[in-house]
Length: 233
Image (cartoon, rainbow, N blue to C red; front, side, top):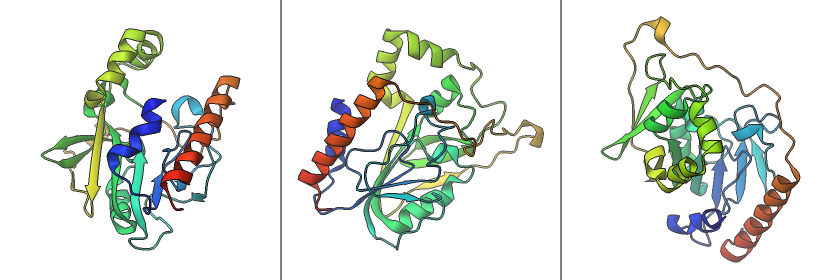
């Protein structure tokens, strides 16, 4: 909860800045003024199929075709979205078009190879301050099935390690004006190309437990308080 409360501070978001979150899903950023998601009625590719949160201005839109004017957004926040897109470079171009600066949170190569999410289309690494996009293939994707998901859920020591060493499992890429990236196409045989195992059009929503409802309500109230105190929007 402390990370949820304070994470926005390290991005040095000013009171006058308008924050757009793309792919807000079930756990929106506390400082986001506007939420944007393509699938308000499906949670197929969200953690535990959790229902989407809509507790502030919300826009339904595709990440590669955003309905916002050029440079109309001061700060663009996106967590765990780009890896779902087969052409994330189109999303990056839209971020640069509508936003002045922002942050991208992405799973690292290590995370992809350990956890192996079937519905992720590409993988990322950060090399010399440049995001490297690699398509998934049957040879570079994770080989452990749900093993590490189960360990993470059941083993407190392992989950603590993942949380405390998040730099190993997560890329945090802050950008201003330009997202520096490179798409590395594969030379692998076409039969080795990875085919996504799911589609976000599946209408799956898991009803939240009583505790989850309480937690979501607390987070929404905290977000409202932060936006009232630290945002003019």
